Each structure stands twice: as structure tokens, then as C-alpha cells.
Length: 85
Image (cartoon, rainbow, N blue to C red; front, side, top):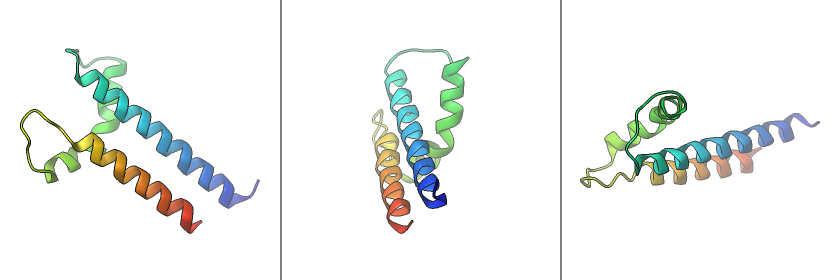
């Protein structure tokens, strides 16, 4: 397998995985839950991405736009990396 094709495939898989994790976190945020087990792993995995975005965005009360911004940035980064390879 071509190393560049392997790198592109790896980038796409990681971007897809992060997208799924962020969407799952958004869905879980609609329900009352305890942070343990898989939920804790989900929050620990996505918080390093969502936390800095949340600190930069202005507060809109209970509306958290950081997942939406993260998904947009993730897709832009994926497109940028795939187009340069």
C-alpha cells in the first residue's frame, strides 16, 4: 500500500471516529447521566477538543456551540490534510 494512501486513510478514520464521539457526547448531554464507564471515557476523549473551543466562544447561556465548531474545524482540517497529500 502506498504510504500516502495509508496516511490519508488513517486521517479519515480518525476524523470519522472523532466525529462519532462528539455526536455521541452531544446526544448524551441531553440526558441526565453519571460520568462513569464509557460515558467517562467519552468525556475524557472529547474534552481536550471541546474545552478550548468552549473557552474561546462567547457564552450563549445553556447553548453550547463548541461541538458544532469542533465538527466544522475537524472537517476543514481533514480536507486540508487530504488535499495536501
